Figure (cartoon, protein in one colour):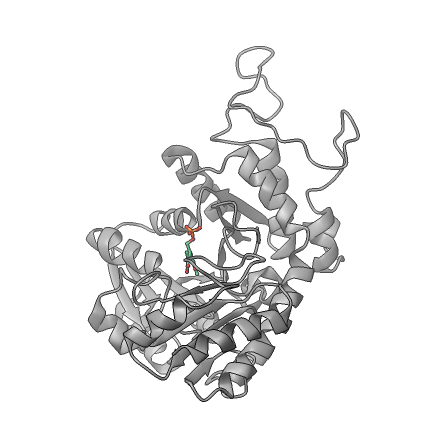
Length: 386
Ligand code: P1T
């Protein structure tokens, strides 16, 4: 980390992990597409034995990821959800884990259908600081799990206050930082113990890789996470790590472009008579606008809004867009649109969705970096059809 410490993130994404190849001088990192490595005598090797354990291309990506979250350690995994799995498995079975109530549907499913058997999982609204404190003091959790902003309601939790509260009670805190990317938010600097990203999203940015990563400063915890990964297997292929290294180089320019378009689109939607309500952290109408300004360096590219209408009208709207693609996922250069209740959050029970506000007229946008007027025109023509 120290070598890149004084660089801006826009330089780190290009240079951290990006030194020219020692043997050939190649400017771009080689793809070490190998499963194993020759040893000169048993146990004597160059630090690489087997690609499930280590791979030089993945090492370079980890170097870059640690630098951009200002962390000592980074671990690259096969998917965002496998990063989440490893963190849960690093906590002793039987422990209590407090989880934000509005999280990605797959994260909710992981906790509610798999880990609820071995852990005491408590879902709460982590935007309510009093409730967080009461839950921590009453239940003595070993881990508190924040997603901020959340998927899909864009709720924002006070990372600094919650992390410091957790520390007081010897509870670890993790922040899923996928929606902001390291460009717009750095939870470790706000006091969190671990940062998680689905690299599938903004970090890679080109919708052609599944991957996840964890960044942290605690050496012992990092070693535990690495041992779990090496023992259980969810590593990323060298080629996918190389693609992420490549995509990551443009993180700064992409995030600026996502945000610029998203703010314009959020304002357009907010003023449209067929739209009931818009949720975007960069709008003054967002319930946590002030907190967003304090702990985030930007508002990102994700917008959630409620159409005036029912499921039929949502479906009509979603099948009328031409530039936005109706698809799950987010964070790519191309704009995506989706229906959380039927798509990304289908595994959240209907009663919970109702409580959270994930209704049939809720639409989520991942705003890409196309020409903004083209995107607005597309939304406008689709809204006309509703
Ligand atoms: O898909 P995967 O790389 O395993 O990442 C899981 C994940 C974790 N955290 C957040 C905040 C996420 O949004 C995701 C994946 N989300 C979607 C696929 C989606 O469309 O919301």
